[in-house]
Image 1: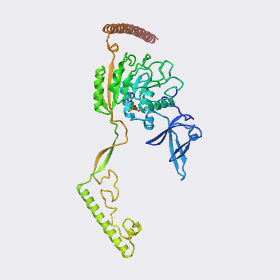
Image 2 (image 1 turned 90 degrees about the horizontal axis):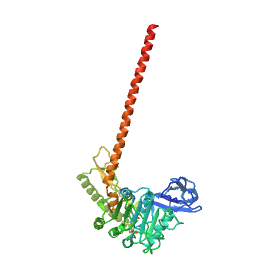
Image 3 (image 1 turned 120 degrees about the vertical axis):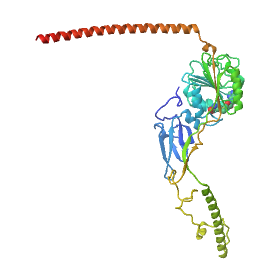
Image 4 (image 1 turned 90 degrees about the vertical axis):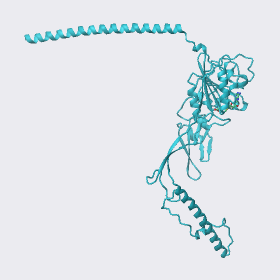
Length: 444
Ligand SMILES: C[S@@+](CC[C@H](N)C(=O)[O-])C[C@H]1O[C@@H](n2cnc3c(N)ncnc32)[C@H](O)[C@@H]1O
């Protein structure tokens, strides 16, 4: 099953879902359709001009005022999708997503449980990296929108029932469910749009990790112990995403109660620091600035007064707001020296770092970087079957390995001795030959 989120291609074709990069904070998803146009305030872009171009291309169009407007056509990735998706809820941003996937030890064969789906921002990151994602959403409309999106993005096969049997090629299985009430089990014949699944047997989800972004994750944690939900042959990792520390407290309590260990809480604060130099301004500069402001205010008031008097004497009634700039220009404006340095910007401009002035190093934080300020609570569960060490088996394995090593060592040393003996024999033969030649030369 092909999805632009899980495989790459070079050329844009009709029917492709593409992301149009208009500006840093304006990325629009569209499906390329022959003879349609993409309209922006920078101009009209016919889809036909985009078809056949390589992904990443810049497309230009001439605007009505004879200028050019540009867009870039990008292939969807979970990171770009996070920046462009229709928000139905708060979402998990890339900074958190990458950390979560790393800590949950996600790989191509990992099976993940996620609740709730929400705007499916994190679901797309999981879908790209893992083998199977089981995601749950109890809100009817959000569930339907997410299901539609997964189908359009090639993450759920449209011709199959959305169940986890061996022939199902879908990366994602979405279930309409309140996981706090009804848990995570799915029956094998379930069409996930149905809520009537209670009486049927559950299939083995065998999840290797769990991600809970719910208002009350502690109410869902005990359902993870139902048969077939977790992969009980290995260590299972969990991450709960909660904005309040009180939620973290309750989650930790539930995790401890249900046998989760190594509990750790992390908060990601993505920030980019920009290093700058800022001019050091003295108190005298600030005082001079205040005096300057006062002086200007006074001069302005006097000027307006004189102008009004002048107009009144000419028989023209006016207010200060209706006075035109041209009329004011008649009056001489107070002189501001452009060649003298004024630390507040009215004089000539100073380049940052000019050695004639004093500077201090400062750092500025870029405010636009998006990382959610939720707390991430990680833990894992180790199943006894996996954790018990069979001492006899370990001893046998060690003995077997030692024996093999000894045998190998003996063989190597025997071969070494044989090689040395052969070398000595070869040397003797060689020196005999040399002696015979020397005797012959003497005789000659
Ligand atoms: C904050 S959103 C999840 C956002 C998602 N992680 C993302 O990156 O887009 C939380 C979602 O959980 C759903 N939800 C809340 N309680 C639930 C429950 N008990 N069972 C299933 N879904 C639930 C809500 O409807 C909401 O859509």
